[in-house]
Image 1 (cartoon, rainbow, N blue to C red):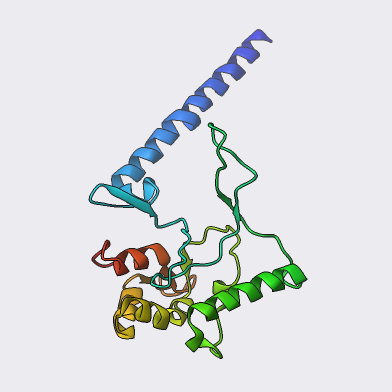
Image 2: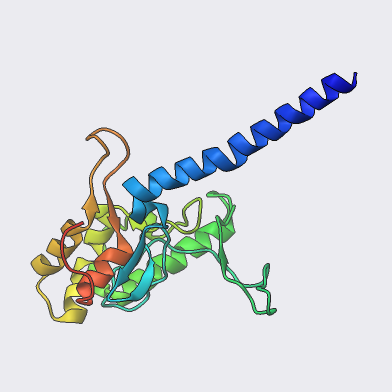
Length: 201
């Protein structure tokens, strides 16, 4: 009986070391070696300054910036170790058929039209007025980006072609040409428009 118990404990110990430590270290080492940017959170750092992760949304509201999907921000549920409110984003969990959701969508439509009245009558892409499942979607559709080109060009005194060129530079197509949908990284576009990020991709 004791022999069986010791064997079981030994097996638990061996598996804990292999799966909990060795496997983790091997995977971490391979990822750091082959994909260091992705393994460290896909953080955009330029000249020693960190501007955020290309995988997490930021809220942009200035007319000269590309706006991302609406964010459902919560400042009441969590606090940090010092007691200050910690920002948290998540899906709203509101019914698409509910009156409250319709009111939120209408308010977002009005904000877009107020920012650029010339777009009145132009269909607004749905991702500009609805929250994503995570509430932190860093990308929008090319259609949602194109909808904002006129506003950005006017605010920056740029040609619409120049703004569109920046958007195209940070647009990713379908993976392997088949999977997913084309998407535009909002943070990268805005950093490029501000002259902070240069280059391709």
